Image (cartoon, rainbow, N blue to C red):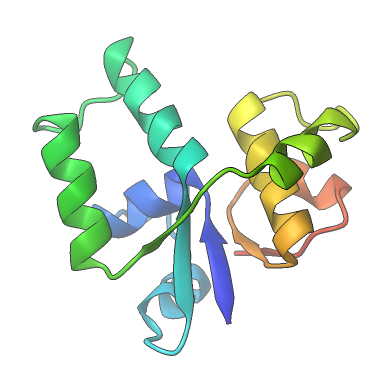
Length: 128
């Protein structure tokens, strides 16, 4: 199964944070699942680092490259179809990065692993 990881899911997994549910962790560690990180997610993380809202404890580039490779995550690039879906997406969720993830999940027909209940207002599957 393909899974799209939200930014907090990605970070909590690599940091082994307790906020990540056991169900989410089981999905991520399952080697038969393909775990996807949106390019919007690593952009979101970079912005949070740049404004001082997030401290990775090391340079951004080293952290992102290592954790994506070490955890065998694949990248889901933002496409024109994804952007087009955002352009007509209702504003149940206002965060632009999360809106892109929602659009990607809709277009690609894949579930999102996220604790964000606001995603439930959209025709996607949220796993947590």
